[in-house]
Length: 73
Ligand SMILES: [Zn+2]
Image (cartoon, rainbow, N blue to C red; front, side, top):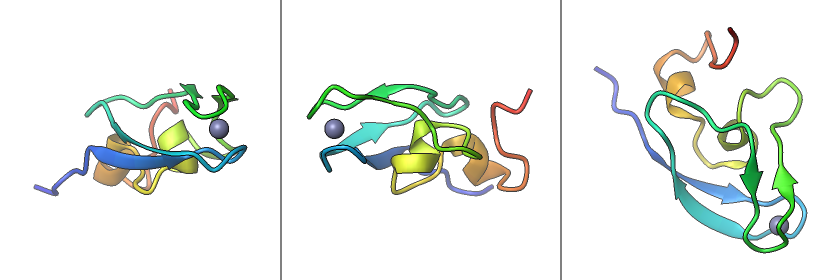
């Protein structure tokens, strides 16, 4: 069983503000509001969630099955 990391540092692309966030174990997050500049962040093209785009760690479903991704249904 692979160990899943549930903590990721999200960095805002607008203002550079970094916040450590915990991720839900079996879901991913599409939207995230930056606490620094209150920009609503959305995933980059090809990414399934804000953690994959802006976090230091990809979201848990991607860690478990990197080739499958998440939110593809
Ligand atoms: Zn920001």
